[in-house]
Amino acid sequence: MKTTTLVLALSLAALGSVAAAAPYQWRDAKGHMVYSDQPPPPEVRRSQILRQPKITQPKAAEQPLHQNGSAAPETGADPAAATENATVPAAKAPAARKTIAERAMESNQRRADQAQAQKKQEQAAAYEQKKARACDDMRASLRTLESGARVKTVNENGVQGFVGDLERAQRVAELQRTIADDCAAP
Image (cartoon, rainbow, N blue to C red; front, side, top):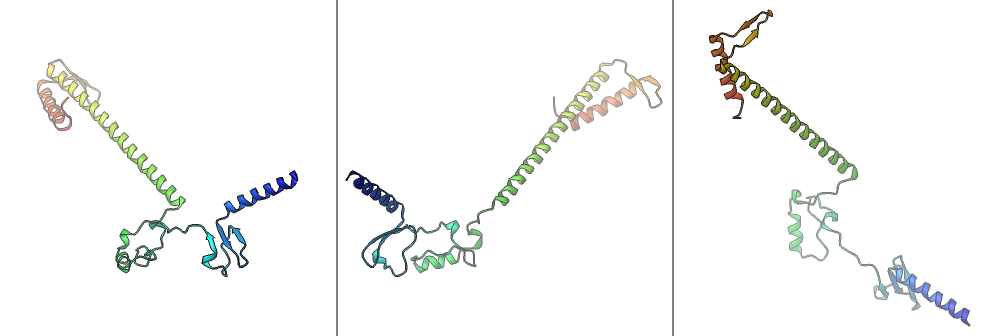
């Protein structure tokens, strides 16, 4: 007696779990309850179907597009709305989903663009540093020339000489002009 009760209880529990997992439920022509994960056969009338999965409308991005680029009108929508949807230009149509390869290519392109922009920034910073050093060197040379100290030079032939007053004045004027044109205020 205990064994049959146990078998009966287990059978009912198994049947209940199968029934709970089945999305379709209907009564057949003989009146028996049928549970299935497949839709009922065509001879079963709608009034006999007790449960079926909900049919959801696809999102706007998933709806097929007409030839003019507008989304397909929903069933049951009023004709004015359908006409309105038909006049939507293709530019306003939802974008198609991108494939993994397309997204990977875009990602690689963004990385390459970022690397190129960073390289340009580094080159610009290096140029600014060189320019700042050159300006500092010109200012130091100007201070030396303006101090009146004797300045020794070496010409192309390797002969040493001193800068005279006329040459000193020319170099001071040239350095002042170059610093004013190329260098910002210190």
